[in-house]
Image (tube, rainbow, N blue to C red):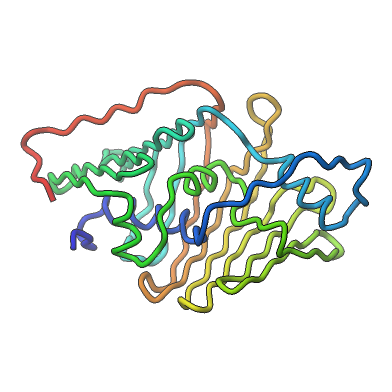
Length: 264
């Protein structure tokens, strides 16, 4: 087992992957876009599902800076990160502690590569490592969607809606888990998403806040609050504040490993 609390960058990368992949029980069901608001009753379940799909961010590239404040999971310090996503190809991040780079991670659809500069270590594992080590399904596409701020596990066949005073709620239940999505009353932006997996005794909640308009009039959530509780990880939270977000601007993903680094 290569996970160790003393290895800051590996701990961070693993926990971030876990948080963003926690609800990945199966591939996301694509939502049909053939229905229009002219034929769907406003505020009906079908209309709200349509709004989620309408606000989905579909970008070839995304880059952003992030301030990450974890609480729990054996990580007791705040971190800064640069995150870059090349659609369906790679997710890259470098992580800094007190202004000094602590390490880098490169995630491909089938593999995870991590450089731990603090301990002079290099790790290369199949993405299924996350699944075997933490008993969490690993899926590159779902991680990509979560970074973009899109809804996952939206199963149109098993979903219902209700209207509250200040928001709309979509909820679904099947044999594996219960999901809930909360949308803004007027904007219909995704504000909260939660997954409860009673079978495996784990639950996940993410709050999407501080939407700001970026390139191409895209609304992007700049503040994410993640709560995670499972037998493998215990309870903890991650606060992520994004800044300098760019869409569809190609970026490099530098990742070279010094021969002096020990392979873990």
